[in-house]
Amino acid sequence: MAELLSILLVVAICVALFAGYPVAFTLGGLSLVFALIGSVFDIFSFGFLGALPQRIFGVMTSEVLLAIPLFIFMGIMLERSRIAEELLESMGRLFGALRGGLGLAVVLVGALLAASTGIVGATAAAMGLIVLPVMLRHGYDPRLASGIVAASATLAQIIPPSTVLVVLGDALNNAYQSAQLSKGVFAPASVTVSDLFAGALVPGLMLVALYMLYVMAVAIVAPQSAPAILPDPEAPRGAALAPRLAAALFAPLVLILAVLGSILGGIATPTEAASVGAVGAVLLAALRETGSFGKALIETVIKTAQMTSMIFVILIGATMFGLVFRGFGGDDLVHRALSDLPGGTAGAILAVMVAMFLLGFVMDAFEIIFVIVPIVGPVLLAMPGVDPVWLGILMAMNLQTSYIHPPLGPTLFFLRGVAPAEITTRHIYVGIVPFVAIQLAALIVLWFVPQLATALPRALYGGS
View 1 (tube, one colour):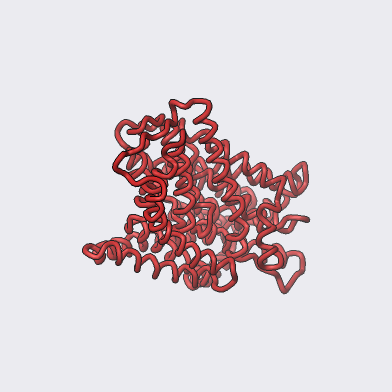
View 2 (view 1 turned 135 degrees about the vertical axis):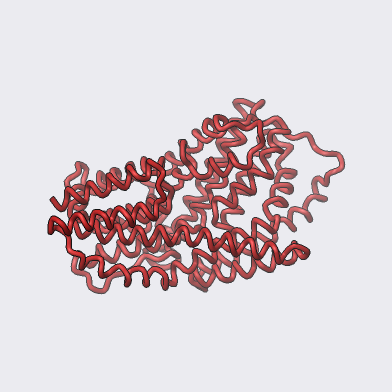
């Protein structure tokens, strides 16, 4: 009866989410309702909920999770400092004379913005506003243009510093330590956000390369879809473009070096590096927006508070769900289900990957991390031969598709909100399909070549 209620709890949450109810209140509210039902039938002890205040206090005082508002603040502030606009203009002039060159420039700028902001929404909005009208004006197919911009914006989810990787790192570390404790290891090792940042770097750059190869292939096979840009006779070219390009690259490269370089080099923790990045973003915005800097700062603080509150309220609701689910014995049920799957460890991981991909149609990455990882993570990490960093990057790359696959990918809605009138929802949905296929292909490559995720962390930190 208890395990049946744990299954019904998960089903009820999925139904409520499909119906459009807020995630945080769905997780917490339905969990409390099922806890009351369980107590009535004497199959649930409210003693489990006694751990809730302590868990919430641990979440709110976590030094790792403190990096989330700092990275969000940095990303929003950089969006307002017009770095994206200058990068796109300079890169567009550098590659524009090539067939498909503007598309290649958008992918490169998306990677640079991902490594300096870490926020998908800010990158998607900035690139959609700036580059989509330019691509259409120069004859790009609306479907191709929409797909390039949406996919490039989601690079901020996998290329560090990424807020999703921060949240996933914290959840995965808890799961990894639980897995070791279950095996009798009472001095458990940890997997850190720095490990995930290092592990995500090579797979993220692989995605950038695959996107660029696709754009070049389209430019060759269907040149009318990605034409070259006729040069502006008054615009600087050649050596004259170098100073402008250097100036546009200076700010993001300095921030990447300060934030990501200090993390990978072991000089600073992700939280410390995020604080440096936030201060750097404020200085850049102050230099570029001297007249309206005060207003921009206030708006940035408000948006940061809103986004951070959303993430932490979901996390608190997920904590409530986790306690009730375990109180019903759901974790034992999941352990038996995954252990009994054909294919052993590989079959269990494959089943979780498929489930996470399907959940991405109705839930975003944060929601999936908070709900799924605490349940399946300890089981998978207790299985033989599962590297926590490799599993984390597999999950992160899988979750990246949740941002862009139809019908509910958040990036598609961000883009729809800022796209020109001639770009329809159909253009966006059709245009993103090849990029979802590319991400799945990259996921398969990572499955068979785990060293893509594990080699750099081991080289930097001596193991995961």
